[in-house]
Length: 98
Image (cartoon, rainbow, N blue to C red; front, side):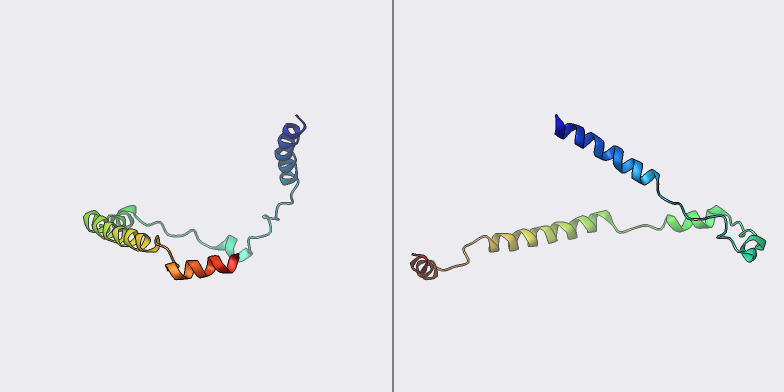
């Protein structure tokens, strides 16, 4: 019961601390030159959107490359699954531990 009360009080306390933080002064961040500057030129969206329609990598080739890499990684993992020590090394280690 006591733990539940503490767990409920922690988020409330955290929110209270975050609510008391000082925010930076934003009113004095603009310089006179920035206020006098012209608005940026508006550009049509069609040329910008045309750039996004550039075809990406071929899905079939990408899948084939990933499957090849997956098979290679699985083969490496299977090769690492065997015992690291030879039979004589295991016996020598067991004798040393006794």
